[in-house]
Image 1 (cartoon, one colour):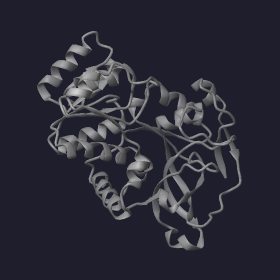
Image 2: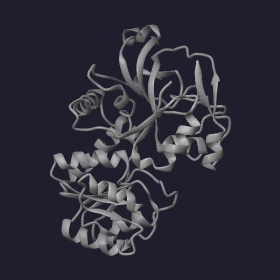
Image 3: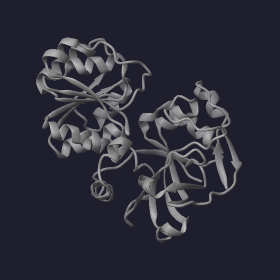
Amino acid sequence: MKSVVLPSYNKNIIRAMLGLKVQDIDPPVPKVDEVVIKIHASPVNPSDIAFIQGTYNIVKPLPAVPGFEASGEVVDAYKNTSDLIGKKVSCFVQNDDFGTWSEYVVANVDDIIILKDEMNMDQAACFTVNPFTAYGLFNIAVLRETKAIIQNAAGSQVAALIRKMALLNDVDVINIVRKQETADKLVSEGVKHVLVDTDENFESQLKDICTSLNPGVAFDAVGGKLAGLMFNALSDDSELVVYGGLSGKSIDGIDVMDVIFRDKIISGFNLIDWKNEMDIEEFNNISEELQDRFIDGTYSTAICGNTSLENVVKGLRAYISDMSKGKLLIVP
């Protein structure tokens, strides 16, 4: 089968991409509790970019096949999972031997989601990570009964889904982006409360809008100084939830008096840990709810285009030039 192969990690993203090769490798053979999935499409996520740079928290023995997420059809399985053959699935795979930038992948049954027939397979390719991340994050706001939240990296797909969830629950969202063009795009789509963190008046703008809306939760995907500013802008009895570190910098500038006297906390969100904390029935109920929202069009993931395995380098270079446009799908 054809697969994209990474021969070496390189922190220089251009060199890392240029090192990618398409090679024929041995097809997968399922073991106990495993299935073989014929890939329909696999998205490029920021985690994939970090992986080929060697800066992600998952490091595979080299050479390695990149890609963690995909949609497809089960075409082979071990005898104890043979009833899954023919099922449409979405998967998230982290094993050392296979990745989803390939024609086929092996996945453990715990790493797949059985899809409804009506689920669009391009949307399903992006289903196992961002929608559940947005759901898990927004549920924190629901439990805190806050009527306003702050989020940075607001041009991302997670942020877009959180805005949809917030709208359905009558929760205001303060959106922070890095570029003015991203802010202009969001405003043109009808998004309210958009701030640009490079604006010279950003800190005062953030303080003013937080005084007005009184947010009780902030979702941080960036870290660094921005995370500290968000924390300091939150109301009493509030929470900064860290789920990413795009800046590569430690959180800076926390007001320790807020921690001591205003009952403000910092927590982390990891999707896998969140999933493991619930029983399978609860997770399946959430999956069905999210699938229904995608099927009826309430939720969607923006997809900027697709590329073949053979043209993956060209596709990646276009994708990293403006990730806010949407997901790039790799289609074998």
